Length: 151
Ligand SMILES: [Mg+2]
Image (cartoon, rainbow, N blue to C red; front, side, top):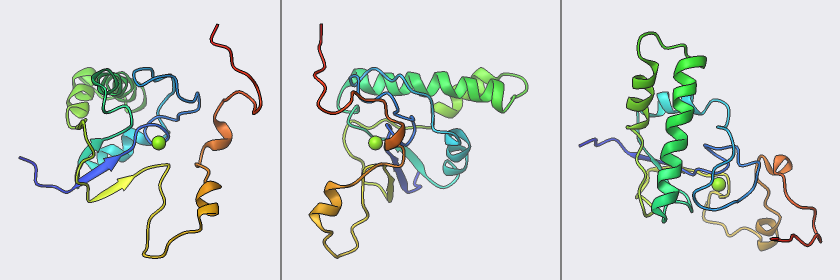
């Protein structure tokens, strides 16, 4: 049993760039945020790392995040880190350190692109209403007032 404190990582907009916008819980079209795997290597020394997202309530969502980490960790170990020997095995061992809980874990700290740290003073609701994420300008979405057809 690992007694390290839990670092809870949001998925979309923290692990994944999330520039394509929401498709569904099990479709992840975007690449990792640069530096993700370097960050995780350091984080594993200090924390149990839990990936928790609105995708987490669905088995297919958790599976998709796990598969996404696997594919991108293999890329990282093979081509960025140029791991000697068995990069695929190194990547799988790395991804196996991640946890994918179904419900929100009791975290020491959380990293999320859609949260404001509460410091005992209530923020202005209008400030919250105007919240934008760090990558909001990169997200591809239909222009406002456009009717999007499903057919
Ligand atoms: Mg997010």
